[in-house]
Length: 635
Image (cartoon, rainbow, N blue to C red; front, side):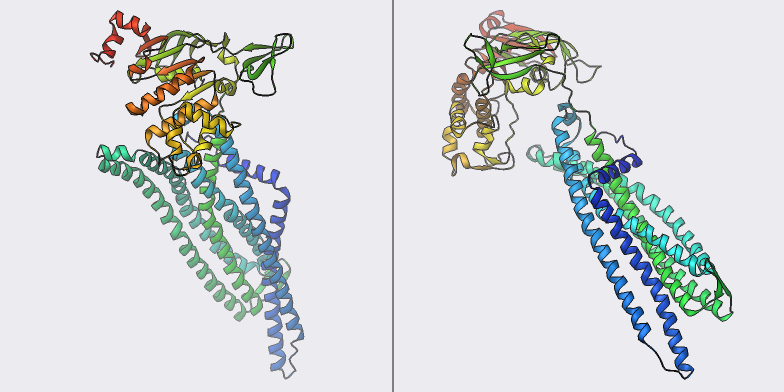
C-alpha cells in the first residue's frame, strides 16, 4: 500500500462520524447499556457499604444484649441483587448491540473498499503488491473489528467506572482518596511509558504483516518457477528477512504489552494493602474523616468500601492500559483502510457512449433497446442540446503518440499508425519493445503523454472508458479464470449471453471438443484459476470468452503463446472466424501467426522501425527478415 496519508485523529474521527451517522440509534442504546452497567457496579459498592454498616449495627446490638433484626439486612441484599441484575442487563445490551454495529460497519467498510477497488486505475495494482492489498481486507479489518467490538466499549466503560469511583471516593473520604490517587499516578506513569513503546511496535507490526502477506502471495504464485530454478534457499532467505522484521516488531510489541498487566496488577495489590493499613491506622487513632459530605469518624464500612474501590480503580486503569494496544492497532488498520478508500479513482471525462443501434424507417441511425449486433457512438452535443449517432466502424488512428510510465523515461516515442475497419495489424519485437503498452493505451488503462488516439475519428479521451473497453475484445497472454463453471467463465465476456451463445463461442475457439470430454462438460467447476485444466485449455476458454463478447475490435496479446503447435492449428481456424469483419491487433512472438496480417509493425525500444506486409518486409530484408529467418533477435 502507498504511504498512509491519514493521521490517527482523522482516521478515528472519521470512523466515529460514520458510526454515529449510520448507527445513531444503536450507539445511543450502547451508551445507555454502558451507563446501566456502570451504575450497577457503583450501586453495588455503595450498597456493600450499607450492608457492612448494617451488619456492624446488628453485631453491636447483639453484644449489648438486644435482639438481632435481619429484615432490613435482607432488604439491602435484595436491592443488591436487583442492582446486579440491572448491571448484567446493561452489559448484555451494549455488548450485543456493539456486535451488531461492528459487523454492520465492517460489512459496509469491506463493500466500500471493494467498490473503490473496481474504480482504481491499473497503475494502482501495478505499484502495490496483491498480498499487501489483501492484508487490508484481512488483518487491518480484523484489527478494526477488535477495536470496535471490544476495546472502545471497554475504554468507555472503564473511563466511566473510574469517574464513578472518583465521585464515590470523594463523597466518603478525602484522605483515602488521596492515597488511591497517589498510587494511580504511579500506575498511569508506568502505563504511559510501557504502553507508548508497545503502541509504536504494534503499528510497525501491521505494516510488516502486510509485507509478509505480499511476499507469501508472490511466492505461492511463483512456486513452479522457484522450483524450476532451484531458488528455494534464496526464497527462504528473502522470507526470513521480511519475517524477521515482523518478528522484531511483534516481539517488542507483545513484550511491552505482556509485562504491563502484571506490573499494574501488583501495583493494584500494593494499593489494596496500603489502603487496609492506612484505614486501620485511621480507625485506631480516631482520625477525623473528611469528605464532600462533611466530617465524621472512620469506621470499618468506609475502609471495606475503599478496599473494593481500590481494586476496581486498579482493575479499570489496567483495562484502559490493556486496550491501548488494541486501539493503536485498530487505528493503524483504519488508516490503511481509509487510505485505500480514498485512493484517487480512475478519471473518466468521456461523454461519448456506445449503444446498440438500428436504422429507422428513414434510414437514419438511432438507438435500439434490444441488442441488434449493430453498434453506434452516441454523442450528446451540449452546445446545441442535440444527440447524434455514428456507426462503430473500428477505425483506429494513432498519431505522434508518446508515453512513459514515469515522466522522466518514455516507453513509446512518436508512434503513428492506423488500422482501417476489418484490417489485421500485427506488432512484433523483443520483450519490452512496447507492443503490449500500445494495446493498453488503446484501452486507456493508461493515458498518453502526447499525441492522439482516434477511434472512428473520435478522440478516445471523449469516449467513456467502460464503453470504450466494451468495444474492445481482449485475449491476454496471462489467462485468468474465476471460480465457477466453464459456462459461467465463458459468459463472463457477455453476462446476458445464452447457453447457446456460449456453446457457439466455444466452437469458434475450438474449445467445444475438450469441454464435452470433461466429466461435467460445460458445468465442470473451475477453481484456483482453472488449475485442473492445461495451459492450452485455459487459453482456449479465454478465447471463447472474447468470442462471446462479440466486440467489433479485437486485441490478441500473445494469444497463442501458451498453446502447443497442434492446438494452435485448431485455434487458428477459430481465430480467423473470430476476426472476420473486425479490426484486429495481434501481438505475437511466433511470426508464423502474423503472416496474413494487413500490416506488420516491428518495434524496438519504443519506436516503430519497420512496417509493411509480410511479403514487403521479407523483400526489404531488414530486421523483420532476419527475425523471420532466425538470423537475428532484437535486443
